[in-house]
Structures are given as structure tokens and as C-alpha cells.
Length: 59
Image 1 (cartoon, rainbow, N blue to C red):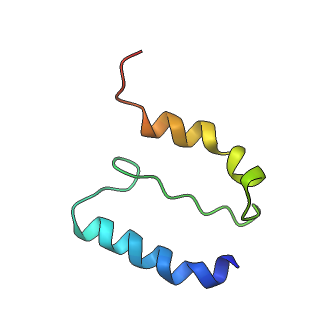
Image 2 (cartoon, rainbow, N blue to C red):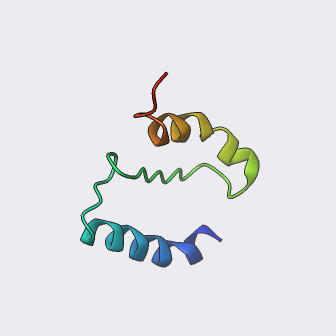
């Protein structure tokens, strides 16, 4: 399944970058070759994603 999604992912990454968004500043892209494409696998990475997403929020 992941292989069938990769071309769309590449297109989105290219579009974001062409519009001036910077990887690891404005968005985070993680390709985990060992992870499955399901909620359980995503839950393992949610903390890191949320930290990046809300890094500028006041504590």
C-alpha cells in the first residue's frame, strides 16, 4: 500500500517546498520503513508530531 501512495507523497512534498515551506520547520515528513500503515503505528509517533506541530504554543 505504501508504495502506491509514494508518488502522491512526493508530489505533496514538492508542492510544499515550491511554496516556500521548509521541511522540519513548517512540516515534518517521516518515512518509517518498518511501520505499518495503520492507527497503531501512527500512535507510536503522535507525540513527536504533536511536539513539532505545537512547538510555538505557550506552555
